[in-house]
View 1 (cartoon, rainbow, N blue to C red):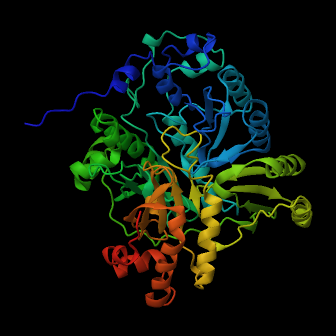
View 2 (view 1 turned 90 degrees about the horizontal axis):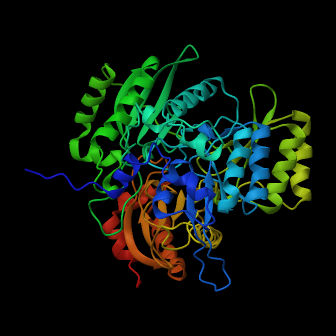
View 3 (view 1 turned 30 degrees about the vertical axis):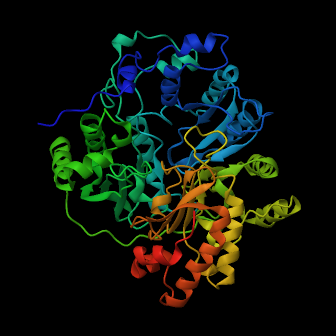
Length: 550
């Protein structure tokens, strides 16, 4: 008879926190520089991470600061809301904004004494950070819609409905940060999330069938809408995806979501609640490394999951074939259905700072532009009047800003923040990305492969926040200054990449890429993508050809 693992200490902390209040209010009012360890855990449920600058330089300040992450369903902001984030970054943060891979925004470097004012300023703009982190349903991602397409626009309300349904019902956020009326915690309940909340984070994504800008297979739960006579008539439902793993621990692994089947449109919320409840009830609460829904599915099987969802939701999944996936570019000038234009701005790893930040602020204010962020960490300005296109181009040019992707390699490249602030980072990601991109681009050009550039991603640790395991080529931080090299993912994220080499330094990467691209050029089929070539050639065979000294 198997014995259930002992409960992780985080479970008792959550359960006994008085619905996420803990000692947050008391510690916020204290003179201490930072929050206690227990409060650090609870802060995440409020959209906050306590961090320290991990740079080794002796002059680097080591006092704790907070990262503030928004809950922005579908990455959609009105002009006034974007302006609020911009102001708050200057007033309380380090002056930059960072677009996340889940279409949200982060502020970095907020000190404890300013965090309450920052959250109140966001609240005044109808923005929140509640549930952006922690063991809850995170920010709901959605297919970007720069074109103003009527089909994709229908997803807006669905994303909002899902986001609101899975928010914590407790009043702790309002009490601690917004001076809300105090409520007796004993009178509250969490009917969906549960009194100990979820075993780990839970990610939901929403798109139209065939549109894969959201990297649909990397989510715990995803809905791909189908349409009849212009209206949503149902959804393909996928479940059990997730990226995180631990190096050298075979019991942890990335996993792509499985197709459960098709459901009619009215059943979406019931199915979503059923899948979240399955994670709540069956997720591993003893080992946080194996607590995601994907491990429940891997252990119990897809047929068990399908039957359990059908029972809880009171329906039967219908078998239908998925259409092929494509990721439509949202970069550059794109015409909209209302006669205006959208401008998809390429940002390297989502960092909006300095002249670029000032330029976006001015344009959003001048034309009252809406903004949507993408899962590839880019920003779309929405609603530019047709006569103003030339003015906008000249505006960027006058400031020396090239807001277009310089080459196909850059279009979908991602990097997590990593050092200096992420406490889990083993090595660099965002700060190393410019050097890595220059290296890859030069090697691709040398071999005449730049137009077939692979989907490339970098992660500072094995948790995989930049979705490296769904890329064609990826580097995953393994030791300080060295990375595991992954190859063989599919361009549309429908196949996982596999580890090919360990402990590769940036210095060793150039010769290694030369070997890889030489093989791809010489032995690849016409138009063959790098990920497809790697799988056809054989990853073990590639490993032997590429082996380098660590």
